[in-house]
Amino acid sequence: MAAGPSEGEGTYADLGPNETITRRTERWRGVSALALVAGAAGVLASQAALVVAGAVGVAFAALANAARPPELSLALGRSVSDADPDPGDSVTVTVDVTNTGESSLPDLRVIDGVPPALGVESGSPRLGTALRPGESATFSYEVAVARGSHAFEPALAVARDVSGTAERARRVTADATPLTCVPTLEAAGELPLRAQTTGQPGRVLTEIGGSGVAFHTTREYRPGDPLSRLDWNGLAKTGELTTVDFREERAASVVLLIDAREQAYRAPGSDAESAVERSVRAAGSLYGALTDEENRVGIAALSPEPCWLAPGVGTAHRAQAQELLATHPALASTPPEGTYYPSIRGRRLRRRLPDDAQLVVCSPLCDDGVVRLLQRFDAAGHRVTVVSPDPTDGATPGRRLAGVERRLRLSTLRSAGIPALDWRDEPLATALARAGRSA
Image (cartoon, rainbow, N blue to C red):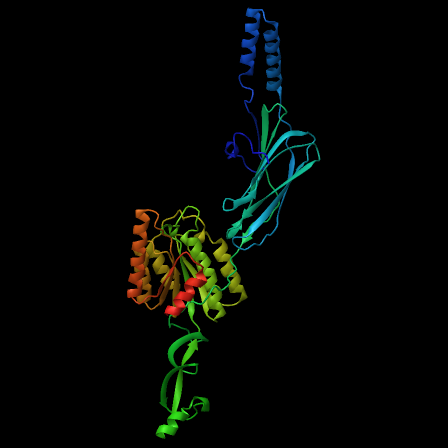
């Protein structure tokens, strides 16, 4: 496919939707001067060929200067192969361009408005063609989809006259819904939770004696105790009737806390996922796993932008969680522009947390401030578990030092009794399985 205008799309960066600009390209700039020089040289040298060449050049330059670009009237249609893809999928974008005007377009160039967060994998979002009135042309390309709602921008169309001296540019819009990519919330493994629960039945083992499956203690028999919990072996040995208590299983109230401060937008390389992207992906997987275990789950973020979804269950709550993880501005793919005030945001989060809620924090632990914050939450009675995506590598001495500092922060949390999972360059399920074996 042909490239876009030689001056590049940046020439029309300020051109608004459905606005039109006409300009001279200066493609034949200097032709008149050269023609006059050639003609004068021909006269002085008595060379008829040079005189004729000069006259032709002057005539051509005059025609070029008098040229006007064709009227630009286009209809643009855009379709995608999948309007609701999963993160990482490839989607084919097909663009149809129709000349709805009465003028032929001998040199038409179109650049589609690809959303900034989507990368073109194959094909080209540019078209170079010629269209007679009523004719259409089609081009397509593939994009790699990232989470979020991605609206296509108006396409840039540039039409030139036959000589290429003048051009008319216009932003052309198309009726199209945004390309929306939401996390699937599929469980990627089980994360061991802390023994802080609600009064509702669930699957988190507690230190409360009662009915269950894991042995807790034996106690003196009380009238009304179920026969299934009587210790018949003890009765045979001692002649005393006792009752077996098991560790009760109850539901937990969990808030998934995503570190989305500017410090967390780090990656081991320029083409690698940032720690925030990995944290959002982990939060989606953990939401699915924890709700599958009958726990109430909410979502929050450490960010200048307030972000909060109270713990809950059910289909409607799940849809809210998907929408938040996909589109909330606090979890954008680029670092926030606002300032994060840790004391203010920390107090607001503590006021919102239910008394019986524990925290599962997804953070790369890139600074000491987040470690102190998590220690305060844990000391205040909100048990903390950390899943830490590793954004470091050993490519440079500075990065190796950052890796050492991060490992020290992991050690500090563990020494304080806070479980901290080091999520390296591996699937989350692998890291969770390792955590389960060591729990």
